[in-house]
Figure 1 (tube, rainbow, N blue to C red):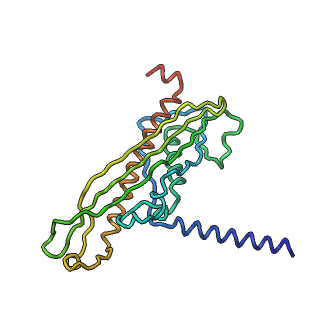
Figure 2 (spheres, rainbow, N blue to C red):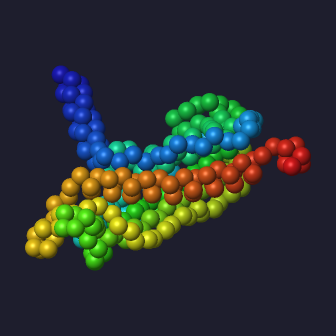
Figure 3 (cartoon, rainbow, N blue to C red):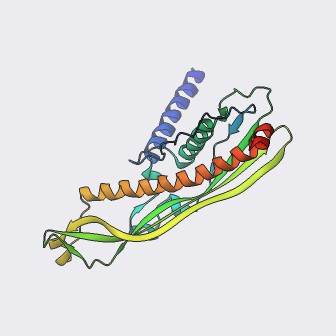
Length: 245
């Protein structure tokens, strides 16, 4: 009887944890991008690569709501994404390496066996985009619509470490960063509500602006991971191919 009680308790606890996980990561946005095909046939590397899940080391203000976040229409918090940031970025990098010709495993995959292998770890230092409202001074289409002006700021920074697991030697440690900041017109709002000083409700244009913000974030992520992948390819390129170039 006691065993059944504990078993029931564990099942209920697991259900609660799963529900909390789904709620905390149930946002509308997806992290990821299409992997560009490489020119020519990919090189087949003899040494497999183990990519451990990247550690999410972003500042707290980039992950969770704060008093400051109210001034932004879009803020890339954890709750905005369907899949946690660390898992999404790790998967994107695994796909980059696999496309380049590496035999790739993750922490739960045992293809490595007794082979010598390369271990890759990473720290996500920044993965963030904000959209701050700016003063509006431009009317569009007479008195029907008004465009918001917004300041976009995006920052992606990831530290990558490459380790020779057999020799227990760090062979690469580098931080890859991509960032940009610019102002542009984004989203239309109701002119009457604006001129009368009433609260302006988010409309269907808001979702278009959010999609653009996520697209910017994924574009910068792609630049960072492609550069990291290129460096790793050069580092692990077979010696005979290096000599022939």
